[in-house]
Image 1 (tube, rainbow, N blue to C red):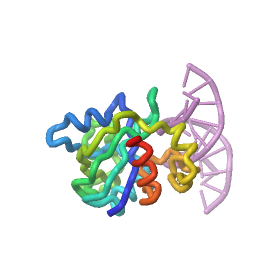
Image 2: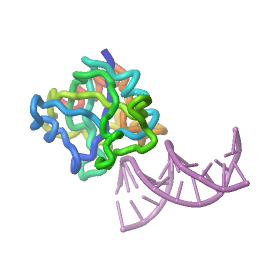
Image 3: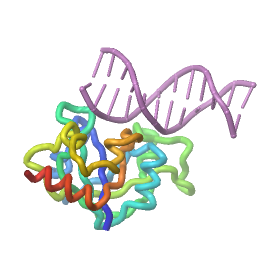
Length: 154
DNA sequence: GCCAACGTTGGC
DNA sequence: GCCAACGTTGGC
């Protein structure tokens, strides 16, 4: 089992939106970055745990936890000309973009803010606080996951 | 809304 | 395959 962090803009899709979906499950689509795509296609597996991170909003930080319920499969929005995620250069035979399905697990009573995460001594490998902080799908080391989780539950 | 950092595109 | 121009991300 592995750990991840997925970014989302809560104005578009928040942890509350995930919790209120049917089955509390949602396809995590619209990822259009190759490094993130590689994680979704090859790394993220059913049973993995995911921090849901709210970006570009008032309270930036980790808002809760989700669980992966389906391994990577082609993101169908890339084939739909009506979709804002449409990619004319992709094809059914050779899909360029992937998504996984995630299911709500818990919402923290308060968001663990990025400003706090940055001050935590043990958090040094998380791409969020390093170069490449713009990555929207990133791995979280187990020790860092445990530390972040404990801080979020305080 | 600003702007720095970074990713992608395309001409050569 | 280099690299400048351009677009996007995302914290503040």
